[in-house]
Image 1 (cartoon, rainbow, N blue to C red):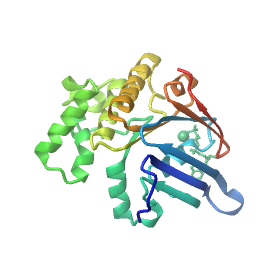
Image 2: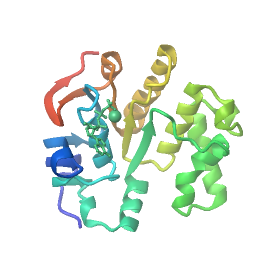
Image 3: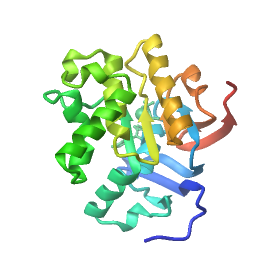
Length: 236
Ligand SMILES: Nc1ncnc2c1ncn2[C@@H]1O[C@H](COP(=O)(O)OP(=O)(O)OP(=O)(O)O)[C@@H](O)[C@H]1O
Ligand SMILES: [Mg+2]
């Protein structure tokens, strides 16, 4: 299961293809894609709709396996794991943030944020303390007992980020995290992601349509038709 990886490499995708469906209706969503991401990087993935960005993120987050090629996350090949082992790897190594926040509507910010720790078997007192700290770090100290419907979009996304980082994952994956936010709120959320990257060294992979959002990253990977067509440095 474990190889001897370069300790600086967190994500290593090699010649990955991802095919959806069979025969005539088949779609090649990833096409011979290779990508290496070192610990501590902040990478933006850009590209037109349908270019394979979400598919790539799902592979990086061990939600899906490539149809061919190889993926290693921190030296672990998720394709070799059973469902339970895979869930543990995801819980330990990956935090996810989505465009639509994906919070449980009937649970408070605190309860939402505690969930990954509950799955991990952390006892209630410690769970509560860590979730509270994560929410505080997102500026939500006074909103812990609010439900999602009682929060603004930006606050809901900050709860989602708190939930994603409450386990201290080395890798944070964000799929259009500012897609439902106005521009001012978008910048607040991006500033928080940059702070997580700078101060905690969390590796961030952010999918976005918007060039100015991508400019917040240190590296920009441009996709087209399931391939990487350009890797560039952001000019900030
Ligand atoms: N579950 C699926 N079944 C079949 N085809 C799929 C599936 N998911 C994605 N695809 C196809 O794979 C290709 C890549 O989709 P993907 O969602 O990765 O694109 P994207 O770059 O994230 O697009 P967007 O910017 O619109 O979110 C598209 O052509 C899409 O239609
Ligand atoms: Mg997408």
